[in-house]
Length: 590
Image (cartoon, rainbow, N blue to C red; front, side, top):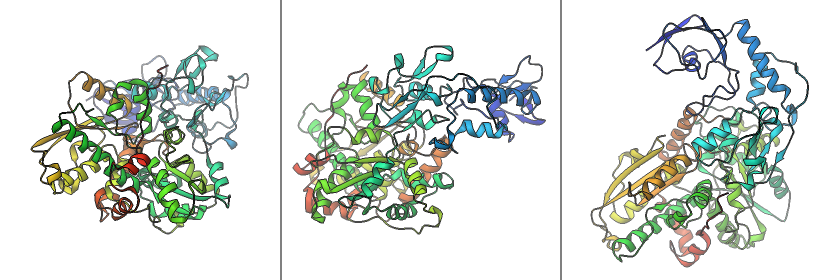
């Protein structure tokens, strides 16, 4: 445990700790624009320079490990001048239209410049070429705002294992983007938005669709409904100054009503519907394999994360038969809103305009997929991220903190706690197990408070096994069957799981994959910055939401039973298969 001094304060830290980390333990915050906790420490931005006694030059604190007896100073004239010079040079090549930038007041470069007392551009001159890439449905890149921090490169390559972004060219001509400076739609990009989530400036972000929603709300011919994903309720408050993990479900519903939506629905309703369909699909596959001795694609993979779906289409098309045929809860709700709900109103599918609020930029891509039109028109018309909804509420002049708590509308607004935990990594699996185990055995899941602890938390890959015996006659063939499940979040971890399965190093029956670290609570459309501390706070909030509900299992939701009785028939029946299921095709890997 080396002991060092930071600005006169002694601190003892483990071997391998960087100066940046040691300083934080003493309460000293060193600014940085490229560092990502636990992911990237490359010293690219040079903003975190510090003075170390005996060192010839200033050192980048994010990549310099501490040594015994080290004396560090973070606020000397030499350090302040160096930081001002570095940030001044970044500003000189940065598109400085802050007043119209989406990231104004949410920009790390702006915040550091303000902190350093920079009030004017000290190094005027030529700037890099501006190019705006709007080629994908989900993301927009603006090269003139990029500060070459390489956070997006690290997340895309190391965390997600996709490799859509790299530094191109050299020197003043350097651009961060796809190979050969092409547009994003020309390369394999799953549009997960993790690049946008870590970008310190406005160089990459979601494609803003707020104006499309305002236009629909102002159209008297449209019946405009909105659905909100479970992760939104634990993160939207951050847009209004609430700490991470604050549940704002009721205020969110009130805000949506004041924006003018004709109905406020909950994506959780169709999360419960997903469990009924996906759980039945899994049990059907097991029956075919164990009783009928048919060749069946196992393990079954979850299908509610659109970035994962696009990833498997590009990188592992041979695994597509293993992916559940269920649409995501977002797309299911769009389909039933434009059929079941529209019929109740005496309206056509064309009359109903469906807006989704999602933690995910890839949902924008998913809504435009050609497969997603089983209602006769596009199932979901517009997708807003959590950040976009926050901006829209502010545009409307709504005082979010003063709003009363309100409730979702029927018939697509009631949900179980199992649907809430779809937001968390491991949540879809736990929700499925709560229902599947009880359907097969007639007994509740034998875990404390229904939580399957081995698949909770932020470990990248988690496993669990559960022995089940079918006491219900229909499932009596399941006698002392050990159900093996796995959970992975972040596509780099998904790759590891798939490779283990292909190498026959692991055998599972059911696998949950979430595109983003932490699951949907860490989605690319959530308020920034999403650190592990923020992820954990949101995760715990979602568990509180689940535990506070009377209904905690999808099959107990009376409105789910009602939609089957009135409209869908049964899980995997003809109508539910037509509206709620789909199939995917292999995509070219460029």
